[in-house]
Every structure is written in C-alpha cells, then in structure tokens.
Amino acid sequence: MLWEDDQTLRETRNLPILAYHKVADVPYPCDSAWVTLHVFSRQMAALHAYGYTTVSFLDIVNFKKRSMALPPRPIILTFDDGYECVYSLVRPILSKFGFKATCFICPDYIGTEYRYDNSWDVGDRGWPTSMMLWKEAAIMQAEGHSCEAHTLSHPRLDTVNPWKAYREIAGAKKEIEKRLNTAVTCFAYPFGDGVDSSFLRFLVSHSGYMSAVSYDSGMANLATSDIMALPRIKITQDHSVDLNSDHPESFFMRIIDPSFPLPRISIDHIEIYDSLGKGNRTFFAPGECLTIEVFAVNNGCAVNVWASLQIIGNAGKGDLLIFNSHPKTDVYKKPFTCGLPQEFTYIFRIPDDAAAGEYHFKLSIHDELYVLRYFHGGAEGE
Image (cartoon, rainbow, N blue to C red; front, side):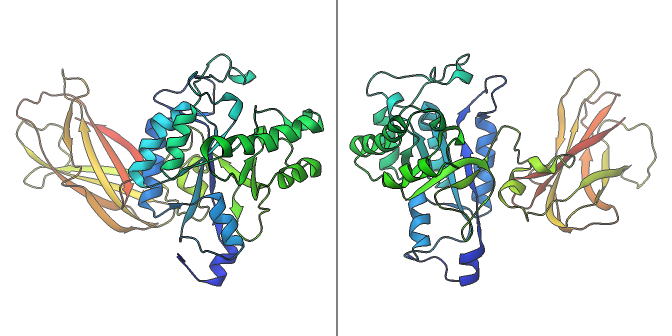
C-alpha cells in the first residue's frame, strides 16, 4: 500500500527513531535508562494525537528501494536489550494506540522457562531487572512487533577478537530467526560501540542485515542518513510532554520534531469581581458568585490552547480542590498569540462551608488536543 507520493517529501523528511530501555511504575535511582509508566503513556498519547504512525526498519529498507511509501509522520519505537517490562507494561500501552515496537534482543539472555536478569550489565548490577522469555517475544512478534538483533551477549564489539565479534553478530541473527521463525533484518550495536569500524560494519552487512542503528543521539533523515548506521534519539524520564520554558530542549514534541511550535506562557495578573461587578475586595462570603479573570501572556509561538483553572485550599481543609473548570468550563483560545496579555474568564461560586483563608489559583494551559501542557502555575488570594 502506498501512503504518499510527493517526491520532495520522500527525499527530505526526518525520521525520529526513539531509543528506550526500561519502563516501570517507579524508576530505580540514578539510572537514566528507566522511564516511568506515567511519562511513557503520556508520550505515546501525544504521538497518537499528533498523527504519528510506527513503522519498522524493513519498511525503511523497502522505502529506500522505492518498493513502498511511508505514512505522513513515520516513527520507530525501539527498546534495547529485551526486558520483561516491554512485554508486560509497554505492550498494552502500544496496543491501545495501535503502535508497534522494535525490540533489540540478546538471545543469550532470553530464557525458555528460566527468566534471566540483567546482571550481565556491569552498570546495572545494583538493580537487577528481569529479561523477556522466548514465548513472550513470540507473542510480541505475532502481534506485529519486531524482534531484531543486539548481539548474542551484549559485548563491547570494539574490544573483542574478530571471531567472537562475528559469532556475536551473525549468531544473534540466526538464533532469533530459529526461535521466532522470522527474518531478522536490523542490527543494534551494543553501547553504540563499533559503528565507526569498517571491519565491524563489514561483519554486519556480511551477516545479512539490511539496516543497523547506532546509539549516537540524533535525528535520522530518509535522504542523507546511512541506513547501516542510523542515529537514534535517546528518551529519558526528563523528556516530558509538559513544556518547561526554561528548558525547551527537554520538551518531548520538540525532540521528535525540531519545528514544533514553542509558546512561552506566563500569568500577568488575576482580577476577581463579585456579582455586582465590584473588584478589589479583600473579603468574600460563602455562597457568593465570583468572576475570575486570569490574564496570561505568550512571548513565544502562537498556538491554539485550552486553559483550565483550579482553585485549591480552604482554611482548615488543607489542599482541598474546591473548583475545577476542566472539562466543562475550560476556555479555548484560537490562537493564543504573542504580544499583549489575553483574558481567560471563569465563573466560580464560593462553597457554603468555606472559611476565611488563602486560596491558591492554578492555571494550566494545554494544546488544543489536551495531551500537552504548555504552562502550569498560579497565584494566591483570600
């Protein structure tokens, strides 16, 4: 099936190849290879909302041969080493969004009945993590995910002798193909080591691989990237779908699309009026209806947004949420342009059991698909 025919687009388009390792409810400390399930779920929701479609490395090979086309926003999701969490935690999330994974596995650590851990990884020995079983890999393969090769035992290829290097590279392909009854076409260099070695690259090609990935961080390009040394984008816990204007380089959508618009939003001031239109009051009674006008300014790119207001706190009641505009009374702005402050207006009734004290106003500004958050902040009032 051909999805697009534009020649310019075919030749110049970027291809984000995301590199993950482990996903869990709570990552282990000091290990950047972990991403929380919450962060990962939100990343996948954003990719789905913005029209990304997962493709395989074989799809890329066929695209380069001009035997097939690609969807408008192709992306490859890779998971290195073959951890069990990819089967038990990642797989259901990918299924929810119709995504497929490419798992780079090391056959020596994929058990039949006995489940290995990653004690082979010197840097991870303090936090042993379970590996996948062959039957789990087979289920993923049957569901349309790809299991590709990451050597037999994850050595640093540029430190082993030539015969061992060949056995690690060629043997992994043969073992996966035998176990899963599938063609293995892509190779991932462990630690990224050896991708610059002409000898090791010869072994990879000679072993029958049609593509390979490094661990060099960067965006692959369908026209210019070497298909036998494709760069990947390392994804960590810090790559959030919540924009931190002080660190835009960590914004997930900007990482996968360098042209993604970046607003820079802040609250200018808040005005509160009673039902008679009077402002500047310092005391409000229970049961009163108030109009709250939040003035925010955007000093970045123009974007369409939804703005949600929360009011938290009530003397003696801690952090009680007493008002939430989402989803019924959120305010939509199309577009929220750069320049003068723009007004977001909400109607709020003070609860009858309210007591005097501080209230915290929290404004959250999201993209129009409500999967990204551009701003979260607030002020206090009484």
